[in-house]
Amino acid sequence: MSALPSPIVHDTIAGISYWRRAGHGRRLVCLHGIGSNAGSFLPLLAQLPEDWDVIAWNAPGYGASEPLAADWPVESDYAEALGRFLDALELNQVTLLGHSLGTLMAAQFAALHRERVTEMVLGACACGHGQAPGGKLSEAAAARLAELEELGARAFAEKRGPRLLAEPNGNPEARERVIDAMAAVKQPGYGQAVRMLASGQLVENLKKVRCPTHIVWGDGDIVTPRVQSERASAALGDAPITEISGSGHALHVETPAEFSRVILSCLEDTNEGPCSDKKEETVQ
Image (cartoon, rainbow, N blue to C red):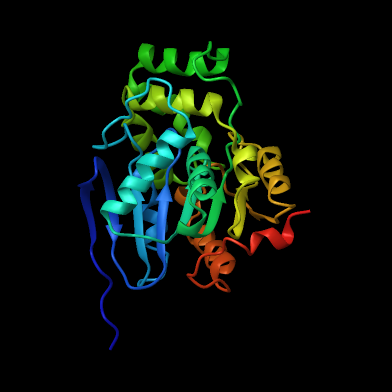
């Protein structure tokens, strides 16, 4: 008789709060997007193999995680926080799952610490705007922060949250989950994340990545259009893009079963050893 899966626990370590379902299988670390949090991965976790060690962090400034020191942090600041978090958990090698803003964090960490990342899955790639840190925010980024201040987090989330889904009215549970997650954003963490996105450079970081990397996109995503995933693919030597039909930006919330199947398909032929040389073979 197989053992029951480990319970999902919520804890804090190294200034980072997180959800974890411990296991002896693949170690999967999930990095959420800008208007979300660790809890957004819970529907996906229920679909993944029971023996996997699945960890979803609250990025600095989200949930009970401590914010970063810099007012305008860059990807490496989040990568350093991730490194401290993994050190505290005594995890030397992991598979990374990045979603949206989390793809920027995952790519930077994998570029800086090749020996620690066995493989990556990037969902709904957010390329960043490549702006010099410390400058004036774009009108869109500034408007995002102003709207949060003017409306308050709950009304802000009710206005913006449904855009993360392809069929927000057809999936009330997913709609409620994305709105609740966005309603939990707070300052200074959200403002720091907005500024990191403004200066983010996913494409440049992916050019330095050497582990197998898989790109997934929902064909109903109006937040990060397919062109962003195509740019990420090109940076990886034309890596294939797997589309999930009928899914929007929040793949892991709207279509967790389908996203899980894609993840399993992507990872099924890869062992847990470091892949620092494997990617070199595919770079043109």
